[in-house]
Image 1 (cartoon, rainbow, N blue to C red):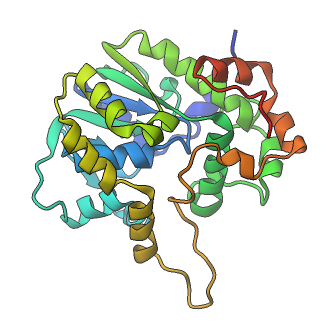
Image 2 (image 1 turned 60 degrees about the horizontal axis):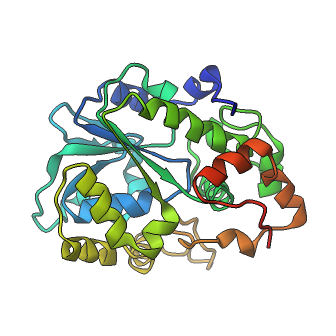
Length: 294
């Protein structure tokens, strides 16, 4: 049996804002649950471009009527992301936002939501080698809370404890096993893989929304996908936060955006951190073979 998240550790890493937002979820909410670095920016931008209501409960105040308003303390970070910046600045070309279903981002395990009666779960997953590495890079560049701060090297971080298990690598299977269990109590559950969103995005998004009862056309989704391309989202981020006058590059949310990026940095020493039986077994269920190391 896979180790599940330690409740005490998980609950100790929740901001007051997120705690309040999570407590107020209703049957109209679909939680989009993913380990960090798994494509929330991509799916969130696509949903926004479709006029759907994707919200970031880490940086927005959620209201009972479906609205979500940026918290002042987070507007600087939100400017890195095209959809969040446009939403905050009112630059949405008058596109109506359908308030329900409301898609709620989370990287927290389900214990954080207590008895909240949300209507469903989208489990968003990515090859754990890419997801864990991307999560480290995000924390190295954007960590605000003390619990998000990381050592200077990826290997140094992997040597330490995880957010809610004994290691960052074991957080991954613990997270997805916990959400698989919680999803059994929900009226709707779906699995979206980052790799599929990159390779056949229109098919994946049309299908996922159709199963939820949200009707969109392939042409509408294709346009939303084009507006959410890595190139366009990175162009926005570079424009909002250019390199400093000394030429030093700034941290980027839109860092690489590709599949199998792990092949660029994997070494035999790092591969050992991804050799755990639980990690490999849970990854296999989602279609990832971690025995491949080069």
